[in-house]
Image (cartoon, rainbow, N blue to C red; front, side, top):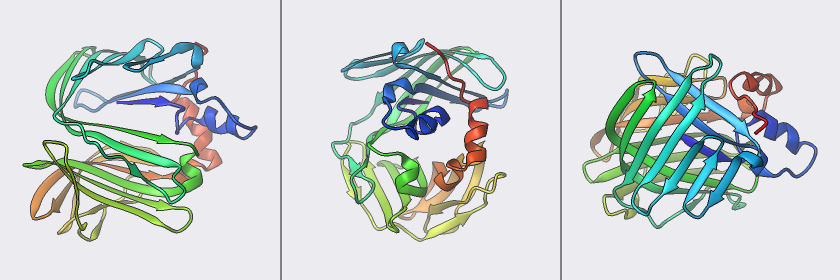
Length: 277
């Protein structure tokens, strides 16, 4: 689940920016993805500022809401899927094990920042539609930027997985100025962050849309399951070996060269409807 204030993947936001500065609050959305044997569901309705309310501990976008009480992030979801309209309704509670104190700048210009708030959380899912309940490990982070992603990056690969002592995160972004941001973080259960030398980059099998995938691993990695496959973005479960330990990781691949192509921008409204309020 992702809450967007100024949706970085919005075709409407991208089009509006061509005419000049745009208020990001006019392009907000809640993205909910469900992957299960009974059928996947995906929702991402974009809403204007009149449907958005913010405070220091809460964010409401349309009928959905996120609220932080100091120890738990409670997410109340009420969204409609696309392209086949079906409701997603229920509650998700995210309970961080520890909160990190370090954020990272992702490019030399300092336009993009990433904070892995709690790389290891307990997550409690209680949905009424579809009927789905589970508890397990989760992850909580935030990104902020003052420039479009596609103007500063051409692609990136990201992966996060639990370890016996906490979690490991790999972040590799290729910048348009020729630079590469390469982060390898070992974060313990007290939220302490330690950098380590990443192992070699291993090429993974590309997606059906031919999105390139790779992961840092001591030995050859593999794709366990592709969860989401689109013309510019893929979400997968991958297997890797890090610091001598096997790891099953959530993995993301993003091609911003693909994202900015006019044909891809023309396809996005079929999955991202625009609400008037």
